[in-house]
Every structure is written in structure tokens, then in C-alpha cells.
Length: 156
Image (cartoon, rainbow, N blue to C red):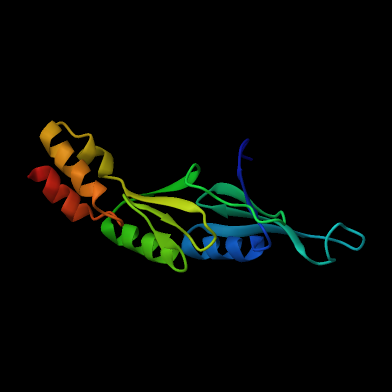
């Protein structure tokens, strides 16, 4: 069992959100759904929490009532091995959400994600300072990150 996991507060979409995230990422599953019983503070049968796992990381989605707002102050970084993976996650997570800059997006629930190719660090922090600066400038002009364009910028 992990010592620390992540809890996401939703007004009333916890189950829907958990099912969405599990559908987007491989090696993911719903672990448990807790519902109010008779005499609980909520309507009997209504979801309180959903425990789920994405790629070995545990999450809890909580129906906390009153609208909670997610901000970019907390985001989930998805390390992508290639452009196909960048494209797949970008497409799935922006469906009903919003694109932002430099590989950032908000999904349909307002949760922030960074869809980042594994090679990014070696391009914007590579041994060629001028190449790194060109790659950084290229990245700053992108929404979804384009590995080939970043590499071309680095190479000059």
C-alpha cells in the first residue's frame, strides 16, 4: 500500500471522473465505490468516494458537494515515450476540456495535466545551450508538444 495517495474533490462527478480516467490510461482500474447508506448525510445509494488506480498510483475521487475548483497549482505530469503517446493522451484529456500552452491542458473536470515527451528534458536542458534555448522558444509557442519540431529547433 502506498503511504500517500491523491484525493480529487468533485461536486458530484466522482464516479464519472474515475471511470473517465480509467478509460484513458492503461493498467488502470476502479478499486472500490463507497455509497451512502440509509440515514447517511447523503441520499442512500449516492456515491461518496471512488478509489481507483492509474498505472500503479492510487487516487480517490470524492463527491464533496459545493463546487470545488481545481487550479494549475496542482497538475499531473504524464511522461510520454513518443509522439503517438503525446497525441493519444492530449486528444483524450482535452475532449470536453481545454488546451493551454507548453503541453498543459485542463480536462473536462478542470483537472490540470502536463503531457510531456520523455525527450523534453534533454532538449531544453541539453549540452548545447543555444540549441536548448531554441527548443525552449519553440516549446513556448506550442500548445500540444511536437517532438519533431522541438528536435528541429534544438538542432538549429
